[in-house]
Image (tube, rainbow, N blue to C red; front, side, top):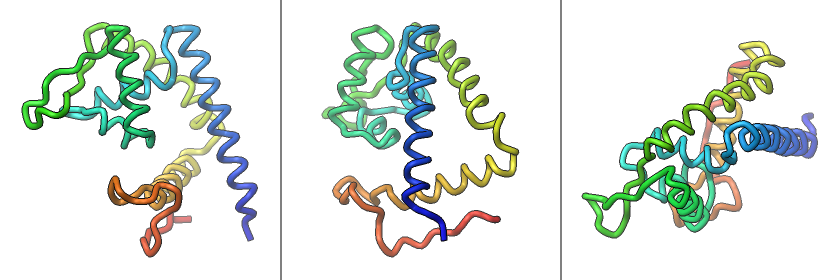
Length: 163
């Protein structure tokens, strides 16, 4: 039987090493943190992106996402525009400087992901890892904003990745 505590330890320690390594290189070479790049990637890939969309995408609080956007805005990397569909919220967009930084930082990010994931794993293993992580992340993601974020949803049937 698989030792779940060992799985937990390996997963968390790997994520910590991965994040810290990428973060250090991004700061050294691009002057941006992994957290900021993460938010910028969400803004770039989400049409009519709102702070709430960042919070959901990276599994942080709306307050934390708002603070991240405040930092990006203060650095002139993104701008808030009035939301034409909802005057209570803003739509986020990257500035030209934000686009340029995201592009250069994206190269560093992709190089590190290759080194940490693609180099040590065969393509099939990497696919299985991606599928398994998607399943457990989906099971742990609340169905709505009012759900309990502390535990996976019960009764949610998920397919298992192919062996």
